[in-house]
Structures are given as structure tokens and as C-alpha cells.
Amino acid sequence: MTRVIIVRHGQSTYNIEKRIQGRTDASSLTAKGENDASQTGKALSSISFQAIYSSPLQRAKSTAEIIRSQLATQSSVIQIDEQLVEVDLPLWVGMTTSQVQEKFTEDYRTWKERPQEFRMVLDEPSGTREHFGSAQYEHFPVLALYAQAKEFWQEILPQHQGETILIVGHNGINRALISTALGISPSRYHCLQQSNCGISILNFSGGLGEPVQLESMNQTQHLGETFPSLRPGHKGVRLLLVRHGETEWNRQGKFQGQIDIPLNDNGRNQAAKAAEFLKDVNIDFAVSSTMSRPKETAEIILKYHTNLKLELFAGLREISHGLWEGKFESEIEQEFPGELESWRTIPANVQMPEGENLSQVKERSVADWNTIVENAQNQQLQLGLVVAHDATNKTLLCHILGLSNENFWNFRQGNGAVSVIDYPDGIQGYPVLQAMNITGHLSNSVLDKTAAGAL
Image 1 (cartoon, helix red, strand yellow):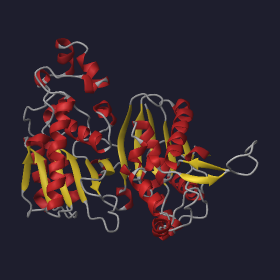
Image 2 (image 1 turned 180 degrees about the horizontal axis):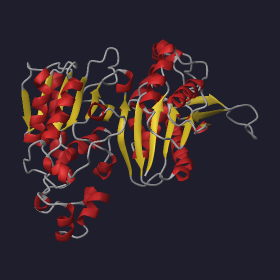
Image 3 (image 1 turned 90 degrees about the horizontal axis):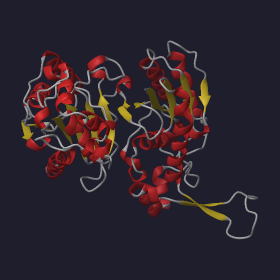
Image 4 (image 1 turned 180 degrees about the vertical axis):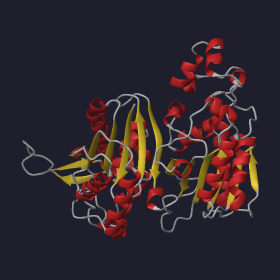
């Protein structure tokens, strides 16, 4: 496995002025940006990196240098890679967002709503044409960025099989790196958030196109932020998606599915840590699967939010594994030879014997999820807690990012982990995955230390 830790640069001067940076090198880190880079280095200090890659732009390079200064082993020199430069927006660079909205109203709308179609018409550099004709060309910033990210992966991954590497880049390129690794469409470019000094972790089994897992995304707890902050003027719904705490069958690696196994002591402890983590968050409403393990997890979290009544949704219950339930992997392999391998490699094609397939799980869980968002919207509630299960959460994450059930295994969901999903434009607009699989409250580490266990 190749572990790749991706960090966005610290706060820059252009960030606080709300200016478009793109590929300009005019902006540098603020004092807060430097301090956050230092905190990020401390959070990563126990990890041994075999290589560090950085964008050549000074805001990223300075962040990488500060992080490296905090690492226990500083043997890795920082390798500057041109493929890590930010999205190229030459006509907008240096302008504030409000100036761009005013001057390029239609273009800005396309950028926000259909980024894959967004284009800039630019002048050809002189001397690049050998014949007469138009001296302009069309530049598609997001499509070019995705091609750049793919090239980076194809070049870098073969060099670091089985190693751990650090990448320090920018908001746009980091999104493109995660998206190309997972197969997320450029149309969903704005559906991933990358905060200044946020930490994301990808685990590759091989090269680009081979199985990959997003272990976590956009962790900001090391900066003193529970979650990435809401955008100014945000009026949409934010949902905190939590996986239930550990059960005894999780610990043993036994398939539970819809058998109603309660939390074990460790699971209750995980729920209590999640409760502590979320105690100062202004939760407006709370829902859970009807099963006892998420229900108990939610009730423990709500001990700090006593004014809330927990609502139960049957569509959020775990996948029915049918005849696999109550069995260990070795028993399943014996009774249903080859089926476990299919479940691990082509999950969307597997029909559980006398149980469900992922399409059925997705259909019912997404229906309830959309109802939850619509209800919150109608009642003008802003922040909700949703506690469910491993498979349910993974199918919801596929839905949120416009992925098929083939991508089911691309997401990790630790027991007691928290993911953050925003609907800035309501149910009609694309959701934004702000952070995923936050587990730092459980182990005081940026790495997910929860036991995987069976579903």
C-alpha cells in the first residue's frame, strides 16, 4: 500500500483579501498561515515520510518547509513538482471574488454550476503559430487541471510503491488529485472542500486506476477547528454523518448486517468520545437508523443536546447480508466459494443470498437522506446529526459525489467517525463533502486507528 497524505497550503495574503490566486506567485503565507503549517507539521510528526512533494508556488513551498521542520525524520528533501501548481485562471488572477462575479457574471455562474464546461479565451503567446489564423485559443481550466493531476499520479505512484509520501498543494489541484484517484467527475469539482492546512489521506494499492481508499478528507482538528467552517452567508443544511460505535461482532470480524447487535464497551466509549467532540456544536436535529447500535450511539452523543428528540429512519439501516449474517469470513468462503472476493472487488454486482444488493441499499438510504435534507430545509434547520452504518454511509458518500456503487470500497468509515456534508444551494444543488471520516477524537492521531471489522 502507498499512503499519500495531501495538505493544502496555509492561509495566504490573497486568501484573506478574497482574491483569486491561480498560478500567480504574488501571495505569501500570513502569520496565521505559518502557525497553522507548524501545527500541521506537529500533527504529522510521528509519521515517517519517504518523500515530500510541493508546488513551486511560495505559499505551498513555505508550508512544506515549515511542516518538514516539525517532522521527527527530516531526511526527505522537498521535491518541487510543476504538476502541483494551482488551477490556471489567468483572466481572473488578482481580482476579488466579488469583482469577478460583477465583471464576468455568466462565466462565474458556469464556473460554479458547470465547472467542466468553464472556459477562458486566451491570446496565443507570440511565435507559437506557424501559419496565419486566429491568435486565440480556448482554455478549459478544470479539465486541464484534471489532466495535470492524472499525469502527476502516473508519474509519482510507480516510484513510491509501499511508501508514505506527503504532498503540499492548493485547493484546486488537491481536489483534482482526490477526484482523479477516485474517479469523481470534473462536474463535481466544487463538491470537495480543501481548507487551508487541511489533511487528506489516500491509500493506493498500486497505480492510478487500481483500488484506492480515501481514508479521511480535510481534517482540521489539529488547527483547533472541529470542522471546516461554514462559508459566510451559508443558508443551507449541514449534516454530520456518523458511523455507530464498535460492536462485539465488529471486533470479532463477524458479519452482522441486520442482526441487531448492540454496542460493546469500546463502542460506547467511542460514542462518548464523539459526544465530547460534538458537545459544543449547535445541533438542530438528530436522526438515526432504527437499529440499536446507531440508536445508542446517537443517544450517547445527544447527552449534551438534551433538547433534541431522536427521529428514526428505517431506510438508514445496515445492508441485509442474508445468509452471511452471523458468520465469519472463513465460514462464508466455505459455504459461498468466491463470493467474498466478488464482494471485495465488484461489490455492485453482488446479490447477498436471501439479502440485499447495493442498489437496494442505495435506493432506500438516499430516499431517506433526501427526506432528511428536505425536512430540515422546510423547517429552516441548519445542522443535523445522522447516525447510521458502514455500508449505508458508503452508499450515501457515493451518492453525494455522483459515483456508482462500484466505488463502494473507495471510502473508509471508522466506528465513531464523523463526516461533514453541506447543501449550500439546498437539495436542488450539489452537496459538498466538507470533511470525511474524522477519527482524531478517538485516537488523537490523523490516521484512522479504528478496527475495520466486518460490516
